[in-house]
Amino acid sequence: MVNVPRLVIAAPSSGSGKTTVTAGLMAAFAERGLDVSPHKVGPDYIDPGYHALAVSRSAGSPGVGSAGGGSRPGRNLDAYLCSPDRIAPLFLHGSAGCDLALVEGVMGLFDGAAGQGELASTAHVAKLLRAPVVLVVDASSQSRSVAALVHGFASWDPEVRVAGVILNKVGSDRHEVMLREALEGSGVPVFGVLRRTDAVRAPSRHLGLVPVAERRAEAVGSAAALAARVREGCDLDGLLALARSAPPLSGPVWDPVAEIRATAAAPVAGAVPAVGGPVVAVAGGPAFTFSYAEHGELLTAAGARVVPFDPLRDERLPEGTAGVVIGGGFPEVYAPELSANEPLRAEMVRLAASGAPIAAECAGLLYLARSLDGQPMCGVLEGEARMSDRLTLGYREAVAVSDTALAVAGTRVRGHEFHRTAIIPGAGPDPAWGIVHPERRIEGFAQGGVHASYLHVHWAAVPSVAARFVAGCVSCASRAG
Picture 1 (cartoon, rainbow, N blue to C red):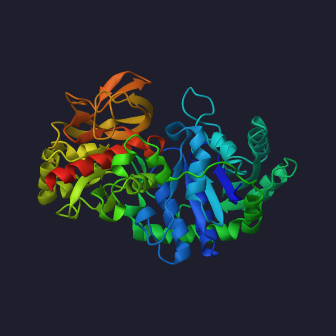
Picture 2: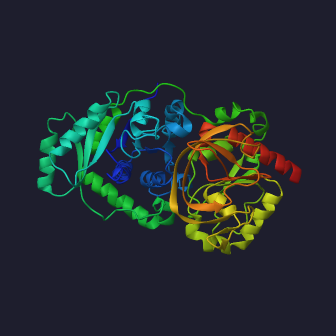
């Protein structure tokens, strides 16, 4: 049994201010000296970057996720990608030793995977964590009706404990009085009132908020401003007491070493101590900001030495690179700069030709293509990539159609797509995946050691992916030696 003070910050719908309020709460509690563990429901990569920045303020040196100095990374809790039974173990792993864990919800409180009931909704995760829920309500266009709204959300599912409200976008003192009076008989206490303001709004573009890594200096100032807003408008002591009222959680704690040892590839990967293991270069920097913290932890547990590199600035891969992981991000924003780094592009071509494992997701797929919006890229793949007017977004079920650097044929995974780009052709002669739900199609490229696809997969759900990838790196390094 583990006691973790915790709150889920939810809302009736998207656009209510969940991210703003959650980041402000994280920053305010961190400024008090609390060790705050940040979490996000769903597959989103961008919000966790803001969370990591907010909680790092307690150390006096703002950072961004695992790249920050001593900061806790923002972690995702997705019951669709990782399955419901992994949510509490992953949460306990990420929140180990913290004073307070804050979990930002996704969309509206009860909105989950399409057509699958409550699966992957904020309410579902709150129930799995047995966590009190604080509802952030956009009160800008209502007064007495707020009571009906809160009552409806609080009573809809008796297993979800809606234990408090934070009123956001309140227009005036009179407006606040009206809202508080309406909620007096609801049985749901008001823990905060925040006025309307655009002063700390983060800029957005085609896939949502601009990531922290692209506007770090501004984001640090925004975190300080959010903390000040929340200190002034919210009952931090009351919220902390509510978090401490959460019951103990029982069950296992997710452990990357144990997960790797349980996989079929573990004897190969586990034979290599991390201190002398193969170097796995992981793309980072402003163009490649999308990654789950557990991926690096699983690679390390499998025996790899994980070394970051920035394709915008580094002209060479890290010394001794035996494999490369290129996650998601916004290469379309930096296409000219990525193209101009010809030495690194040439290194990527040589590495791919050697048969070394290369795992590329979404942005990584675009980087390995022949071109992106007319700008030459690595040319490892024959595809031509471009921006599109169509947003591709949603959960997917997929199966490996052949043996690749990540999976043996027949391996089933759940993933998600999130992009406004297209690549032609959409699949190579040997596809990376066969999508089996919600539609049937082939997708991505598997050639030599390269596995490139639009599909984002959370490796905590399939740790064999990390074990197999590192085993391939060991094999490649042995041949090169």
